[in-house]
Length: 465
Image: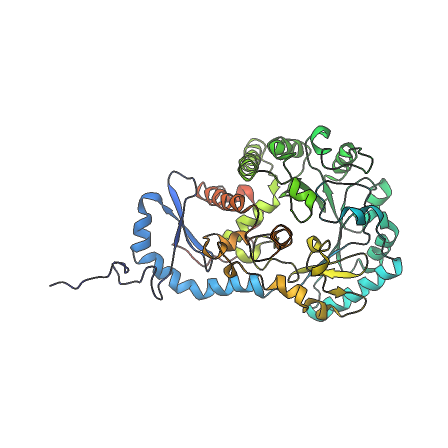
């Protein structure tokens, strides 16, 4: 009589979904020919022909290859999640802003009547931060420091003095609404190689000015577009669109608008619900997915027609998280997120928080830069709550196949909405759909069309079926 074989074992005696055997989830990706098979613990995946998926799961090759590489895959993912050093700071030199954007992550009253950081304090802060990074980063490393807001150019003199003094050490950036970005300011920033981030929320004033207005209710679309056109050839230009229910239907049109003006990189960031204004402007998830993917489709169509790509950075980062986890550039779509771990934020009073989204939530301020050392601040309970928040720790994320592609962001908005950190992202369905779209891009052989040129440089392929 032949030996009986347990149904939990494949034909070669490799355990499947039992004991020490690897567990694979099957993810529908909306492709006629392929499905994704994912080991969620390590973010290992393979696109299997739809009609051969069961053979992949029960046959010897996939489990064997996975088990041979499991330790390396787990180590790489663990390093991205827990092994990186802080190397960036978001620095708010003022609480105030000359705009009243409906979705701002900072409290409205502070933006209207808040304080500027004293110039001497700004210089003191940069010296403290330089000393910290010199003690932690390798020699020659240049940490990034982004003057953020509110509107940092309201404190232009102090900011520019800091850039002039410390420009050889920090890689500086300025995120601005462009209303104070006159010719002199542009010349100064470009001469010092400073990254310049602009915010534009639509392809027309009728759309963009719905959410980005002065305190008097006047839109700033024309000024932003003028600055964009002046800077479009500057390598340090970054363009950010905050996606809300007011502009979500116009995303494909916005892609056309930006591409026609030579923009090569942009972020289409779904609005964060950290403050009430942002929550009120959050789009319907199904509508967000539909128009976000239409916009991505449009970037592909334009690249094929013109030979010129426009990379959507937040989606490109998700793609990198799938094909090269260690190469990702943004740290929102992984857990723990980058807040307090890869970067932190400094407010105008010297308060320090895990990231800018937490500056408006005082209960997450770790202390003050002028009163405590940076290592002490990073070790506070306020920071540890964020740096130890992992998707394995709460349902339903701990059962999700794409938990290490999504990361259940953003802890600040999760807390603001739920009153606790151990909850899924408010846009959970959208992030799942985005992962499915990403796998579809890979299955279509279009990976390079959605990523920056040269993204493969220095990468090693460690899994090949």
